[in-house]
Image 1 (cartoon, rainbow, N blue to C red):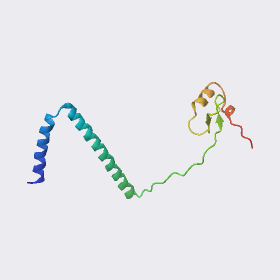
Image 2: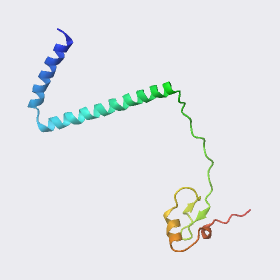
Image 3: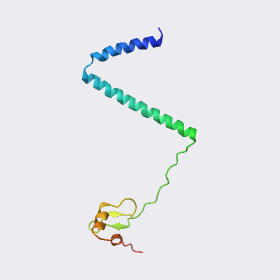
Image 4: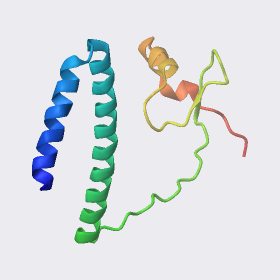
Length: 112
């Protein structure tokens, strides 16, 4: 028997089974199918991206390690809160600046 005819008969039998299943069983089956599809799609996407990188000759480069930056500013109310001056301003800096203070008032004094 050709595989196409066999697959058609099996799908007809599966449909009759599905028609007899309860709503809870159908939802469980739906969740299982969605989970399996999600995993297979991720795996397929990873394979395709790897093939694309090979075709394009893209070499993944690692970021160079940046040196640790010492804190430059300190919160006068809580000296444990510091900021290097890089990235987004901490809330304590924004609130102090909003109250009329200047950033240089929070500089950490370093001894030479």
